[in-house]
Length: 498
Picture 1 (tube, one colour):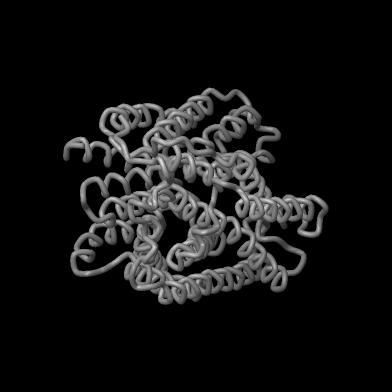
Picture 2 (cartoon, rainbow, N blue to C red):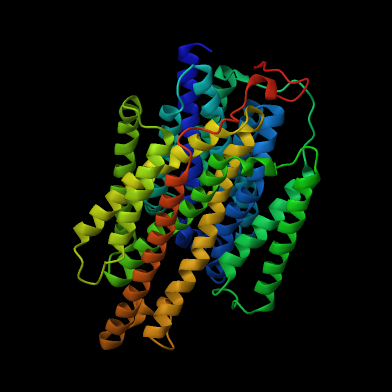
């Protein structure tokens, strides 16, 4: 690839990352006009499925995408994922009822599951082909992912308020087509020339496990009591599918997630830190917005603007990372520094009360962005540096998979903590009733809610403190089993994929 081709391909990758993250966040801000248009009577009850359909499909597809990258080559999988995502986006824009929109969101999610994870594999191979270190491209991907995460609700709200909600989906089409054209003509990546099997039973089992676990975390304590037969059945299904999946991976000739990867101390550590990062991200974004709206009477649209300081913090890290890398900072250094910074920020958020300065909250979100900005790209890089070459795709998507599972577990854990603390402070009440209370009753309810968020942020800080400990224990250099060319499977040779 020429330098111009590589720069165009990198720009296409960054645009794809932005598309992926925006679409995970943007719909939540437009649920009201969607429901009003498609099903004003019963649509509110379908909103959880509207949001969950995308994340369920994307998470279930993640492990399979990694294996497909290693077997077929990242370029072909990348183009296929973008195409499926665009088809799903176009269908969502044409939906005439909630049922069809939910189904089309699932199709969009199947493509969306590969957008960020496969893109990160492509970026790693682009940097390797240029003979450069990965931090620049990978960290820019992490930076844009963080910015999209923070700005998604803002963009979604603006489109919903000033344009038809269908443009939330239609806007993906011209951007995605531009990505397809740019990547199709410029990408020249290594591919495998030997036929290798894909463990489809393993892919089905891990998809079943992820889907059951996500449904438990989405429904538990909200749609269904934790002791209900539905939740217990889903927990049993998750446990059974996980056990069958692990057995399959131990015996399959080409496992979808080789258990040997967990023998690498850096890989195992980075996966665990990704899990904890996913939990902390949930605690910071979701509950900061809830705190601002319920405890501080900040309107929903205005509350989303408090995520901008976090995006600024991530941008600062993205701009400074190249200079820091030249000064000797490694991926491990970034991870140690990032987990420490995020721990301090979350611990500070835990002190927020009804009289806390909102400027202090903005400052804490800025500090949180500085911490997360050091983690989002560098944890992926850490996994990529340590993975065998023929497992690069699996290692990259596995890191994303564990972050997604962490987010799901964080949703369940923090939601349970908040509900238990709130009910202990304000018996016979729920947090959803706060907006309708007045006078002394509202004051007591807000006090109970703030106490609940105090414990939520402490739990999130504890998760990041554990991540800090794990990052300090990581080996200072990538695993010595970092692959050499002879580690490639017999009959496999790098080639240019056109």
